[in-house]
Image (tube, rainbow, N blue to C red; front, side, top):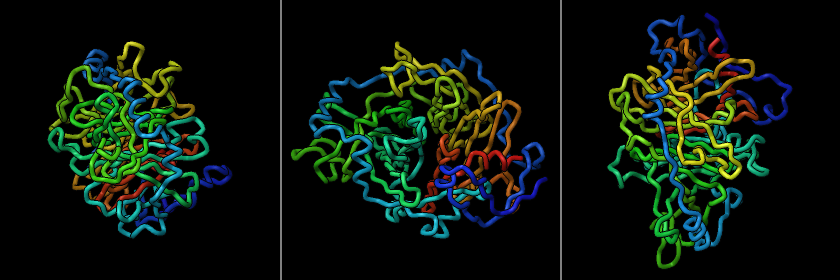
Length: 449
């Protein structure tokens, strides 16, 4: 068993990473790190079991449905034209608080081991909101190999109204995305954008119903999880529109377009629907509901990684990947020319309740490592766990406080890897303890040694 101190500092000498990472955040407990195979009484999810190609194809296949360009152009024209990501970031009206300005309670939601190198807390009104819940994150590190969108570094964080995934169909909450300008790591600012769906041939729109458990920004598209078995929704980052009416309505009004008080909307350009029909939560062998998403740039082509949503009595959780299209005219889309999407790799794991998934193959390694985040088994107010898995088994850090694997953030959300900085980004969704933070992926791996 290896003993490690409370603080971990990154190597110096890499200017970009040093600028972005800053000083490691001090936490309240030290950690003792051992592999899962050495632990006793752990709740290890075990190794990954590969799914048979036939069953994976039947359960995981998708078909693409794109909204007509004419409808999208009509909506853009009626609303004064597209403003894109740049237009939103030029009009930010909220500031994320730096670590020193976070409350002690908020900082207590950060992981114990490995420690975060950067952490931010939301505007106090958003941090206290009882209606909205942060769920997912993706960055311009996903979107482009430069790690930037134009001249900016950007983070997108998906929030949904509380209960959106469990409310009856048609009554679940809205979904919105925080567009965060992260160019200056000391002064992050953001603006909300409401997700909507065009209707009436582009003359109107309605709010999108989504739990936003997962979200991936690849090239110029944003793919998010939809609600109630509808698969995935697709958005175009160039097609962000500004509303002209500040009322509570969503859609076209007598005076123009309104979005429940939000200045910006992003209309869906299509969806990916399960071939097998609506999903079923927690039933092995059925079409799974999407839980979390992430991007893997270490595959060729790049791939969308997914895990099924928690729920029911299933003893195993499925994780899988879809390849992105390589056609130049299909930037950021999944399907082949016939509009069909097949999973190219699929596994099951004993880990249930997975809230985040990531796949990454480091240089010199023969196979991808899968990382899964899980909330505490004993309630949302306790620390979760982060496991690294392959076909042979699973590993997680162990904290000295109680010799458990509960070392990750409280109420852990989706995972996103920023290749240019080597950071793993995620957020917490616990009430009054909502933090957006980054941990070097190398620190995660070292915590398992």
